[in-house]
Length: 459
Ligand code: ARG
View 1 (cartoon, rainbow, N blue to C red):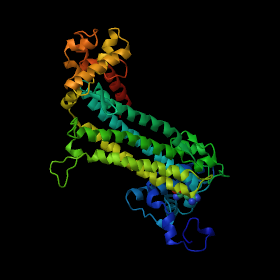
View 2 (view 1 turned 45 degrees about the horizontal axis):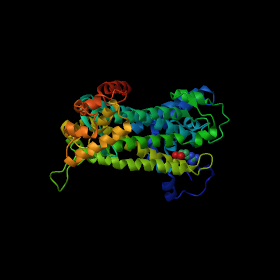
View 3 (view 1 turned 180 degrees about the horizontal axis):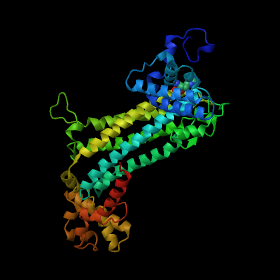
View 4 (view 1 turned 30 degrees about the vertical axis):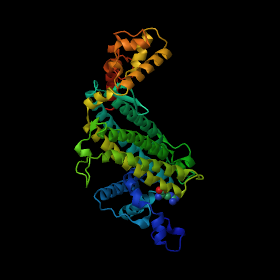
């Protein structure tokens, strides 16, 4: 197999179909710049350890810089017969700098090389997700600041439950996304471990300095076990899981936007820029961005399942199956990044409608808990208060009115403890403000949450 970097022991020609089946350069060229960074760090370390000359290291570093330029300018020719990103770059390097290029792979295997490249790639993408998540949080904060006073029905089981502020509702999403950022920060500690020096699986006989390579790349840790270093893909699984949770959060948000934008709700108006029309129905303004975000959640879950399934039966250590780690992550990254970008823009541009929300407060007896709590303050045990209030709800429901519309005399038939001071208690705004508990929907808590999240989501 003339021309192959591993061709020494082979005699027959490669089959084109086999080459097409085994190649990865068509997708792992996404790792080109990371491969170059890793190789430059490796070359510098080889020279520092006296394994290659500093002249050779300088030629390698300069040659790789030139290759980076060729890739950036779109001049680099990727060759499928060179199989993957690593061998494409190494072969080109040898064309450019001769024997020095052939010394680069000393003390290294593609097994530790690909693990390093992919760690650098995943780490960079996770940092970008965190940046995008902060932008999404800032969009929620901008909306929340406008709606500290806006009331709407809070739901459980999608049924009206108790009144809340819109700010509190929106901040609930901001907190979800803040935990996604925490997960990313925690995960990056385990991504930032350099596997270089693990070799194919059993380390190497050269006096390499793995920690120096790690530090050259801005990381603090090198691998602790050479076999683990080349076969571990936990860091990808974790990242895919984080991507899946981000998408779950975006999907819940999308579902709500879709429901709230429907005329039956009318709680939100979609900005034109984030909606599309129908080719047949002239009146339509469809929430396609939200729907596609909800839809794309499925493919990211699929990416996670794909890699979990790929690794589940693998014996130690590196197996070629692991090449299948890249496409799911690249797909996940593309989808998560695009969806977060859309969400940051769309959330900021949504127009929330306080009037339909206020109208909705009148349906569903959102103040029933207030009445029960009122009776408790008058000395009734909570279970009895619950019972009395339930009877009054039934009475109001039959008449098609709210609890606040029932005449005092009729309420007193259920409990003599009810007096005229019950009416202000039944007011929804008062109900929210009475909830002084930290983390509650009232003004003080909401302003405190906004301040905490603002610091957390600063650029
Ligand atoms: N393209 C391969 C991958 O992504 C690189 C490592 C190949 N190693 C090997 N021994 N065949 O996993």
